[in-house]
Length: 331
Picture 1 (cartoon, helix red, strand yellow):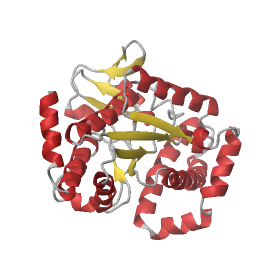
Picture 2 (cartoon, helix red, strand yellow):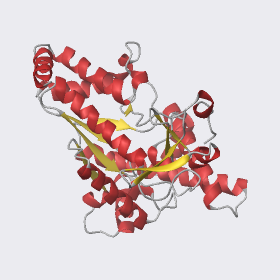
Picture 3 (spheres, helix red, strand yellow):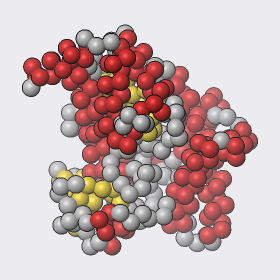
């Protein structure tokens, strides 16, 4: 196996920078976002090509930055609770596996820096700082326990060390956030900004309708709209902070992206929704394949709760039929 990997590395390193870059880009795409790895869609990743090539030319590891793994959704119709489950573990293993695959063809290897944005906006999405603490600690423990050596973490606590949590969020907004009026105008005129707003607004509306059952639908939508702008404002501020902290890294995103975006969309686990992530859902499996679904969807199938390594829950069904997995649920 080592000889085979060495032969592949030697072959790649005998190629020019352009060929090496294209092979690495195709590999990343094929694992993290298979729909973008075809010849017809790779031209839309021209920005990612330039970023990877710059690293290849100096023989540095392919460093990727992923703002993700914030905290579990407070909507108990979607998740088991505040702690990571099998979904997070499978997603982390997939990211680590991507880095290992790159190392087999490119000897400097690769690394993913998971930049948790949970502390950035948890107060807006009704998640306590205590639950963010528990979630972030558990993610770090997963990385260490399962030997995911190509992964590391970075969060708001690391950058604003010594401040309390509210002060961290305030300082982030003061130093990196754009005025809300500018964001609101961009949502009106820019298709990618509007696409992101609509997706997050659907999430916020759905979660608030469960968390704040006493409010009318119209009241929930109104509150969700205001909160969505604030979530995006802080998320963008976090992105600007990360650009300064990791200026040469390849930027990944768990959100769908428009063509020729500076961010590369990734799908951490299979799902019927392009917006679904492990922290907004649970794993449903038949022992052969997995899919992310809402908790109430799994329960409607009378799925059995099981545990991986006696610690990480998931739902089991005897068979993942097309009828079980293809129906889309409104977000």
